[in-house]
Image (cartoon, rainbow, N blue to C red; front, top):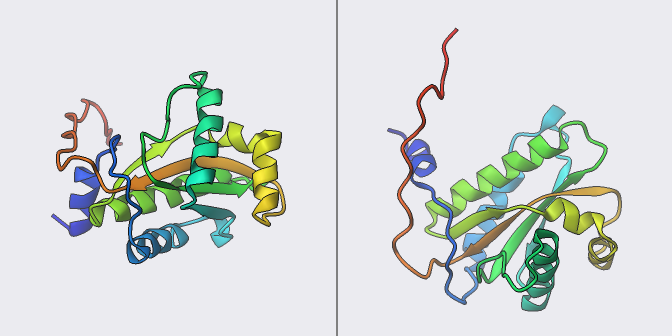
Length: 174
């Protein structure tokens, strides 16, 4: 089995993290994997925001929890940093392109032993006035749709969940 296939089979979502940022080298590899994701018409109509600031991370966590309807919950599970994928709002393959960026980054993070998990509600966050202000403050112009957050960090435990058995009738042949 190829190394890539092994990574895809063994990758699991992590929901418990050490309070320590990953190294710049690890982060750069994960970002490079995202930058080289396939995109509709090769337009690369996505961007990634790398959040290492604890203040911004906590602010986004509160916004995400509010969308979830559970303001006391940390939807980032204590992960010390995150990547946010956004796509050009008017681009026809925006959600698909952003999802491919996420998938590439998740696989690379896993290959490096970095805990990671896809977190939803970026769309709602960045449609809000507060989300638009964050983008403006970061110097990001244009109309962007939040696709997802990728939380990152070193797992608090060496044990991640095992893969569930794959369902019957997953693949059909014609």
